[in-house]
View 1: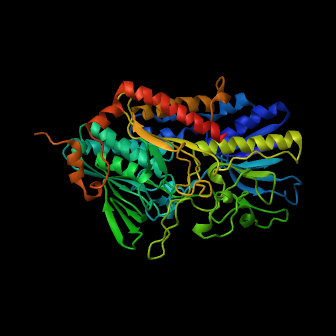
View 2: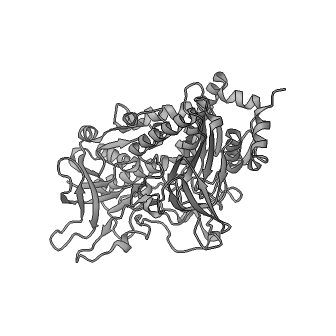
View 3: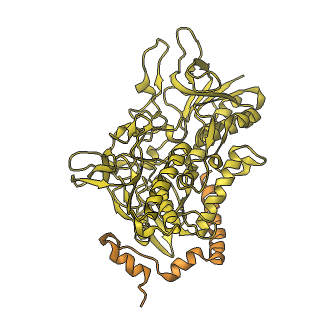
Length: 489
Length: 55
């Protein structure tokens, strides 16, 4: 019997674990280690953040689902990996620290034959003074990164809307809280959902709404922007995005590294080196992501974290990490199998793998501060990578070490993205987009880097219907209800 | 005479002057249930093509 240990129970980890358990059956064991007791459909957190959904509607208990799937569930956080075992243990193992199941604070060592690192990110609030401490949200701003954060954001939003009703004008600031953030899409969705709710309440004239982002131009989204086929034109996402901001009356600051947050005020540096301040009554700023801080040790107990992980804490996989100039970046730099190059029984999926470089054009302020978005690896790509990795490991277990590994390069995969701009079955709107491939391939598509036959976008009520249906569909799939496997990632 | 919403928005901010702002017809079509049902079907089909190319 082989044992597969999956670290993390988010989109990538949950997908990998549930498919692996299904494919491997009872002959082998799948163990999931995640510090959370609940699964969270994160894309709907923005609706919790404006009070349009409850926390319970976007989460469910993991334990009964894993029990049904025959998966061993450890509510714990992974602390370190010993890929060679140790002086006392011949097999590789993971050291975990329980966060629940009545064993909180206790440590354990879980041996494995294969390991998937799908821990997701550490929400690195501590990277910006005043935004938070370590991975904990601070007191000056709100967040929609977790369901609990989103619920808190909703309460704070209600407070400022009450002030608007009393005639007090309010300033709202939403965007990214550091120069190296990713996930601009979540902030984009939140700002337009907030605007929609305020407009619906008849309070739009009482709110000044401002966007602040580390993107060098509007519509970059950490992907260097995209050219979409819209109405017979190939249009930059910049046009598309600026149009929505102008239509909704939301002003914007781009190329901004937020370097300090205080009560009611952020300080930032722009790409031109100038410094600025922006006041706010309500602010949601996305933190930068980092690896969760897993350590790695060899058999002798020496620290080999640098061998297994990149400096940002994400796991090294089969990508080309050699330093290159932007002009020399290739689609082929991106990983295909997500196998760790040193320890072949370890894989990484979702946000946990170290990308070879960013996707957007690198940018620094004249003061030398790096201000550019890091690559998105969430949603559909996370699910597809999780499934491909699970498939590879199942084949390695069943067919032996020479089995062909399954591939899921982000430079050869597309993504469908639906960004909500307001919730409502009759008056909601969302930008429905597809991009193909996620990582541009300028050898194949020298102009835009992407296939404009399959890269399109439009905004409307239909997009909202799709996003709302996907909410139910993916929670249904994650709960492993009948026919869950036919729902694509 | 009532000011068109796009006139109001163009004037609101220098950033918006060069933006493409939808007019009355485009805005109406975005929430027109019949047209949006057609778009719903088309967008889903397009997404399914991209999803199938990615698996």
